[in-house]
Amino acid sequence: MEQSQGPPDPSKVAGGGGRAMPTPDVPTASVLLVFYVGCAIGNMTILQLNRRKEHKFLLSGLLFGVACHPTNVSLSIASMIFVNAGILIVYIVDLLFVQRIIRARQPEMGWHPLFRLLFKIIFSLVALALVLVIVFIVLSFYPLNTHLRTICRDMQLAAITWLRVVAALPLVLLVLTWALPTSKNAQTFGAGSMTAKSLILATSSILCTLGAGFKAGVNGQAPRAIDNPAWYHSKTCFYVFFFVLEIIILYFFIAVRVDRRFHVPDGSSERKTFDVATNEQQKQNDENAWDHESDLEKEPETDKEVAV
Image (cartoon, rainbow, N blue to C red):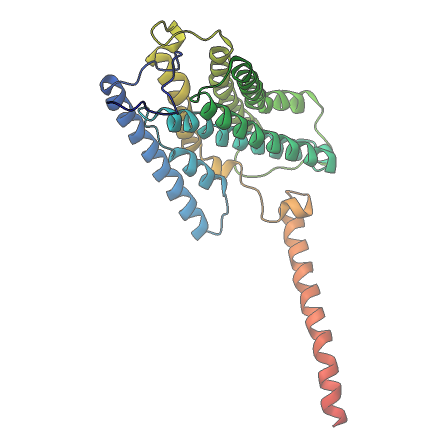
């Protein structure tokens, strides 16, 4: 007598890429994995070379992390989680890039406490959206009544819609900062012109928005039976919009050397400036103040020795 297998149950609705099959999924996933490994090696190499030069650009480490995420499409729950989680690091990198451009062009606004608080809230909501997506992906594989399933779907759609907004937000902020007049106190950072930096960010943000828009559009459609998928459930759409766009962005970042173009001086966040001279002067002042405090601590001991 066979025992029925308990939850999680196989999905009964069509998803991105359709049913996972040895052919063509395994060869395709293997090729994609090679590209991800190559990107991971490239970013880690850049990170280590920069560390030797005391050129800190930790975003290369983040890009190394997204390049290492698994792409095994045969594991339904795990693959759906990683498919949605990996690209979020690129969203965050784009937000950090546009934040630096705004701070350079309009430092009065970019370094304002409220503006910094806004970005902290955005990052927190991104993390919350990721948690919601993961939770409701897992719950979708368990038997739920119609009401709970509807709630899960609505919450998941809300989270995915927010992530689509986050993907497009750097492009919107970039347009706004260029629409505003450049501040008299405008600064620069990294290598290359501000125009080149903006074009790099715009390219990445457009590709991210394209992928996020497709995901949101697919999830917003009425569920279809797994045996009756729509054209947007095809393997071509799945691999192009979920993986190929991401790989293009990662290799694009390596090719244009974002580690050089978007590098900022150490301690600029605390000192609220990208000006190298100001940062060096402040660093020297901090060292002088530390030396002065050390001398003051030694003076009582010297007086005591003289008295003896």
